[in-house]
Length: 191
Image (cartoon, rainbow, N blue to C red; front, side):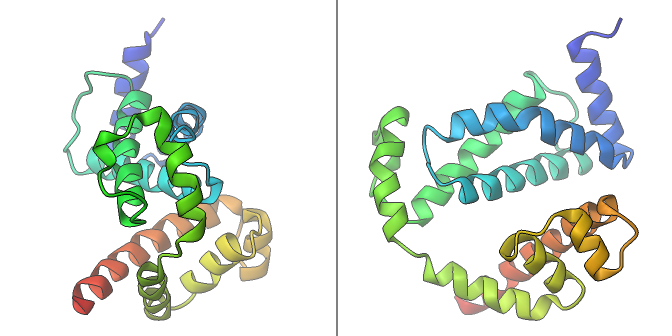
């Protein structure tokens, strides 16, 4: 019978070989533990969902590019480590405090929640709007339906004429990758 380590080595191998179902499996199995940790720092479910998705994408890219070949911890522990850095960057970018490192992790959520609700990151919103304009179709429609209109993948598949919800999931991932690349270019051009 395979051990947990054997299963995780197999998952890494499957990802390297292009098996997207492996990343879906990791996404589902690590999510609860990540959110449990992250809610101690931030009480904004929408932001946490975005941060978790960015975290899993970063993990996926690290595996696909060969940056990760073996782990010294569980995949979930590694994902939480990535997510912690992304979450801290998110909080710093929101300019909710001057020195994040001096605040106890458990007090961080209480200190930042009030400020996060009050501060709208206008710069990021502008960059996102410019990036979506450059994204084009069908990605712009797909992301708008999913994130802004909160439609389910099956409904989006029907509306956009795709075969099924799995196709939408794959297409959404590709669109997010393209959107992030465009946002980086837009952000660099504005500086």
